[in-house]
Image 1 (cartoon, rainbow, N blue to C red):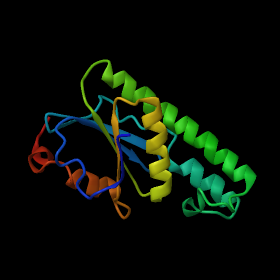
Image 2 (spheres, helix red, strand yellow):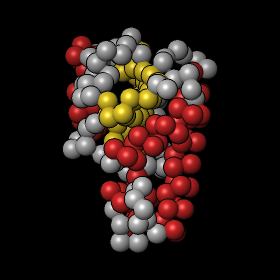
Image 3 (spheres, rainbow, N blue to C red):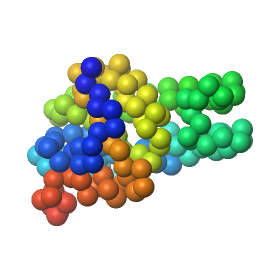
Amino acid sequence: MHIERLAPLGVARSLSDFLFFYLGPHVHSRLVLNYQIHRGRFGLSHDVGLLRLREELKRHGLTLNDVGSEALPRAAAEYYTEWRRLCCRQLVDSVRSLLSLVSFNSVVVSSYAPPKLGETLCSQLHEEVPEVDFLYGANFVAPKAVGAANLPYHSRFVVQ
């Protein structure tokens, strides 16, 4: 199985070609090819991020850290399962669409979500697309900024 549990800081440094997802309130993505960052023509974000999950958990007096605990109420657990299904579907569709056009072997997922949530999501993604390695970054404070900083040094200064 090609899933790294809590990938070390800088997991993308050795990768020249990969798809990067930032799982925040919404899901954002970038494609890195030959150490150069590419983004689509439109600033597309997907509405399957953590915002809706956090709001639903809050209604039950819970936080993201409660995900996966035995004490999770049934309604919240069902919502989490459905959210994970929708999130995976969106990410898998993106990965498969890009794989039909370009070649890459890795997907990096960075988030402020608790490790258990990220690891579970990456495991589910790997089940759907087993030919790709899914790496979950261990950047909890500012994953989007730290994730960009962990790209290969020269790619941070390439202007498209």
